[in-house]
Image (tube, rainbow, N blue to C red; front, side, top):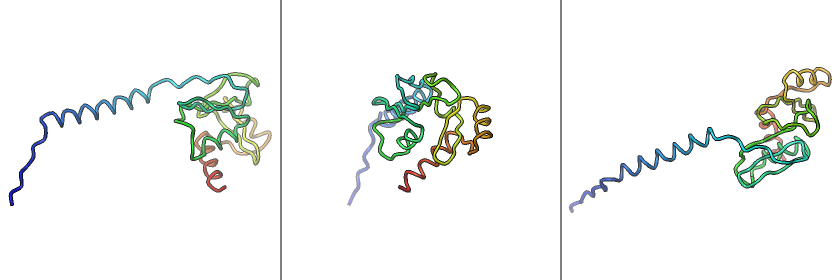
Length: 143
């Protein structure tokens, strides 16, 4: 029994390398693409998806929606209204805010000094964005 060795097409390796390079270039460009701006919303937080955006009345509702396994699209950006700003003031990227958590209450602050002052006056824990997401994911998966 003889086995015949098949030869690859002469351009197969080149096509694979070009495809891999194009994929890496796309990932590189997406990494540095600007975040979509926040949209009009009367809530305390909003999640911007590639399919649209959702407004949330409170931070806890926004973090629960963010931690849910089913999402309406790819999360492009998350914005919050800081407690140390005007009620309808400018949006802050959720990852840039500092959070003060007390049982039943979560507040976002644009300035870390304001968050420290709020924690000293009212108690609670000072948390960065990543910790709030982790705690919320844990709470959502326990339900």
